Length: 134
Image (cartoon, rainbow, N blue to C red):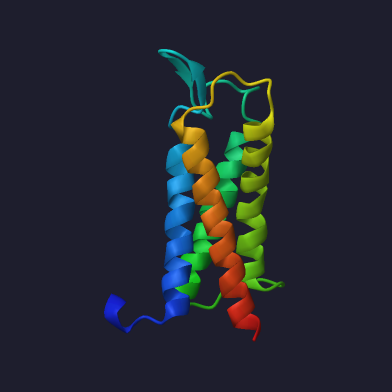
């Protein structure tokens, strides 16, 4: 793959896929805690609802974006970039809800990185989807 000859749309797709990967990495970073004590998205089942689903959604959204950047056919009954947007927007909105919820003690860096990464991936997937329509 020659990055110099890529279109701006392909760069956005790869940027969205990289943001999905960063979100996945953030699941293992500290999300909540006080002082030296912290938990990530996997350590406490009731802390983060359905972490496996977030992981699968982020992997699927990133895969769709990479396939689009490589000009591969994506056999989906609905527009593939809309699918990528919907898949990554679910973890984004749940992360926003967790950030705004006062029940969780001390927000840590993983929560903020997850929020920014999933938001960036959602915005880039939406931009690519709009470009693909028009």
